[in-house]
Amino acid sequence: MKQSKEEQKKATIRKLTEVARVYFSERGYADASMEEMVKEAGLTRGALYHHFSNKEGLFHAVLEMVQGEIAERVETEAAKSEDVWGQLILGCRAFISAAVESPNRRIMLIDGPSVLGWETWRRMDEQHSMRLLHDQLQEMQEQGYLKPVSITCLTHLLSGAMNEAVLWISQLPESQQALDEVTESLALMLEGFRAK
Image 1 (cartoon, helix red, strand yellow):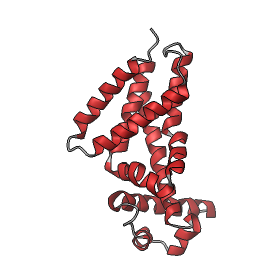
Image 2 (image 1 turned 90 degrees about the horizontal axis):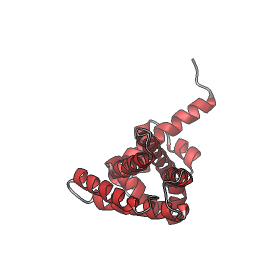
Image 3 (image 1 turned 180 degrees about the vertical axis):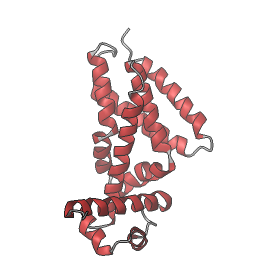
């Protein structure tokens, strides 16, 4: 059965972003060759420019894909607990764990802010992982689990702490132990916001 134009377009975009993700992850944005990416994807340079206009546009799409996948993981892991505190900790751990993985780390935390600019990167982060964190904290406060604190402020504090933790863990040879330490420290820090 022949694909519709829309299906062909989606397949082309998916192929380009999947190939580009590997290149951006392994080589970094600066060293990822457009020629090599389109060749490996079995497409023309014209197809790339038709869908993404330039290398930065392709990178933007790849980062959006990475952010979306990490947000899905956060939701999936958080849903494994019925306890709201457990959901929060599992979601935070899932974010950190996913962000330190080599296919994501460089794209999300190193090249993302430098290639797209801090404001664009932050807006994307807010639409994905930070949105989930904010919603969880808001729900917890509404149910009486959190002290009366600004949820927006707390979301930014926790997000910043987790992003910094990811950068730190990424530089260590033994990331599992560091991930455990960060999760434990985060849980202790969050206790300070628990309503008594």
